[in-house]
Amino acid sequence: MNWRATILTLYPEMFPGPLGLSLAGDALARGAWQCDARNIRDFGIGKHRTVDDTPAGGGAGMVLRADVLADALDAAVTPDDPRPRLLMSPRGKPLTQARIRTLAEGPGALIVCGRFEGVDERVIEGRQLEEVSIGDYILSGGEMAALVLMDACVRLLPGVMGHEQSGEEESFENGLLEYPHYTRPREWEGRAIPDILLSGDHAKIARWRRAQSEAITQARRPDLLKPKG
Image 1 (cartoon, one colour):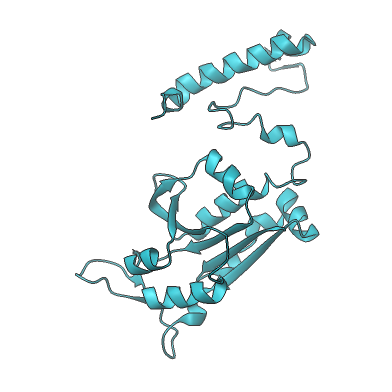
Image 2 (cartoon, helix red, strand yellow):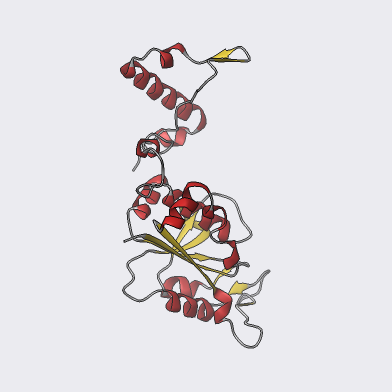
């Protein structure tokens, strides 16, 4: 079964976007994964297809209506659809490489892209949406976040990357940031490739790379080195 992403958005024309290019685009053309973007506004209320309303209790902005989004969700997935239902949200649980691997190994995901001030809490509860965040910042909507999540998953699908090992030695895969990379020319602007990388001694190279990863992680992301629990 191919990995399948169903996206609920007010801007379906944003998909597949950049994922229609390069390795992800090649895989999409081959049918290795599927991208189905659906317009929430198709389920809007009245002549103008209204999808939002003012926040209960007052406040700035508008809120995506529970009834509209629920109708869009119910039309997009059947009750027995095993895919997780994700809502891209800045208050969600931070997305990690471990979560991405789990998603990539499954049948896909239904991804809701919020807009305006937020989404009515009742539809989050009533349709069991899992809120997911890609970082501690605010975007105009969930579409860019959805593309990030999808890209991270699609590149891990079998046959998408040219070399499977490339996905195993990257940042976050082993709890560390990735070691430095070098290629030709051997010397550039007075900076040379470290001799050990040209030694042919794979055991020493592996130890050097591990030490570099640990040092970079300690300097840039010491939080990754803290014991979990």
